[in-house]
Structures are given as structure tokens and as C-alpha cells.
Image 1 (cartoon, rainbow, N blue to C red):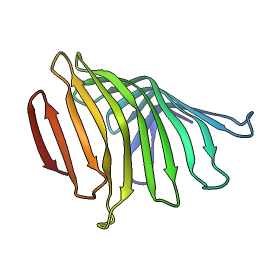
Image 2: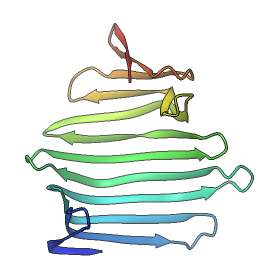
Image 3: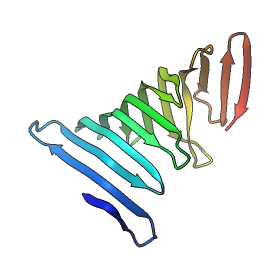
Length: 178
């Protein structure tokens, strides 16, 4: 999809510029691979470059659960104020259609305005539909590290739909409501 240097305006008035390259690979009957490469793409003043790869898409014939990998390579976003975000990420998703849940594993790393960061999922994060009909992660454990600062552990909980997350930094622990 070539939006051109001058861009195209959609029905909502959003102007998009640049190029989106879409590729699919259906060579393996048990898997689908999709790749989207953004080249000098721009929307709403945000400039985006990089490659998004969704691969190993598989459907369990018995449970209809869908598993796939979602990766970002050489991702660069420049905001309208000139802030630069560089990101690489590798996540695996398991979508359980009958259990109405999404399980996520993996990690992301990058650099925001010269400061490195990482976000690692230590124990699978499970998003599920809670009684409030809001999809929240009531279980899982992750770690976020920003530059040279100590890591923050994010505990999404024990499976209870309580909208709470426990953050731990060193010896300090605080529970917050989402």
C-alpha cells in the first residue's frame, strides 16, 4: 500500500503517508506467516518504520485455540514533538476462544530518548473476561527495567478479578488499582 509522499486522507480526515509492504506465506499447511514492513509511514504526525511479523499461526483442531508469535524488528517511532522510540519485541500469544482468555509470554526491549528499557514476562500474563466484562490480566508476572534504575516487578495477581497490580521495587511494594 503506497500512500505516497503527499499522503492520502481517509473519510475521518486522517492523513497517511509512506509505504506498507504486506506479505503472506502459506507454504506450510499448518501455519500462516504474515509480515508488514512500514517504510517512512506517517499518520497523525507519528513517523513509523520497522517490520511486524506474525508467524507460526496455528489453530488447535480440538479446542480451536489459536497460537501465534508476534514480533517487531527494527521498530522506530518518532512522535510529533521529536521523541524517538526504538523497539524490538518477541511475544507469543495463545487465544483460547472457549475459555475467553489470552495468554502472553515474551519480552520487549528498546530505547526511549536515549534511555534503554526492557519488559520481560517472567510468568505468563493471562487476560480474561472478568465479571465486570472488562478484559484484564488477573494473573502473571513481569519485570520492567528503565535505564540504569533497578527493575520493577509487576505482579498481575493470583487469578482473582480484582483490578489490582502489585509493584515491587527493591524492598518497597505497593498495590495499585487499574
